[in-house]
Image (cartoon, rainbow, N blue to C red; front, side):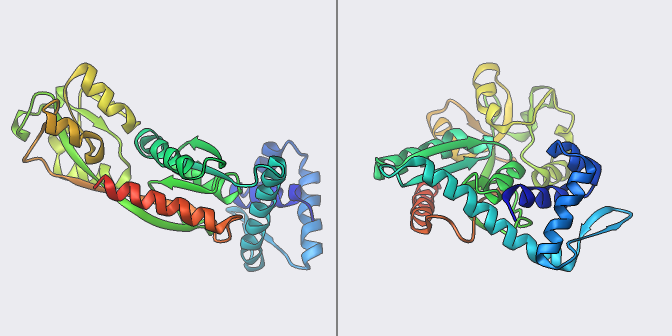
Length: 284
């Protein structure tokens, strides 16, 4: 059993189609089938069954999935640790959703580096599903995500909760906010549903954006009204640079950390989560 076979197993379990799996891995279908057959022979178990939905994991396949996940994580982390050499054994790879990168990932990483000057640190920014994939593959140690995805068998813990406030450069009351001057930011499906229910008059906004991190720069340069996290706009509201729309509804959005159940350096991961907890506590 080698890591290419494990990768083949994961890819087929995800895409569920032999042809698509072969295409993604640049293999022929016969080579792909041979890898899966060899793996099943080594385990003496049938891992996939074919039905109208494609290639689905059997009960044995689902049981093997978690063991294969641990093998993949350990291999990737062992490869990284060996590459560092003897002088730099401690390393940490952190990731975050783009919305959390500037005001959370950067100070979190900076504080860790201050506490551990010899720590080799790497940062990644991507969306929640990709963060989960990278943590599951052992490519990241901890990922900050906005969706509590437990499908990969990882630990998922809520680390804090964002309070989304309606702020404006010109309005202090909801009646003063028009759809034409409103920036609609996509904060996720839960927020979208709640926003549609409570603020239907703003659904057809003049401008919309799928990346919340652009909200504050837009208001600063173009003006208008939008929902932004309190941790981002608290000081601007206090200073009068932005106005709080007092009677607008507020929304809450949880933020989660995901990491392996068996990290390469459990002490370092625990310390990193402790630093994150202190940082998020200070923003409340």
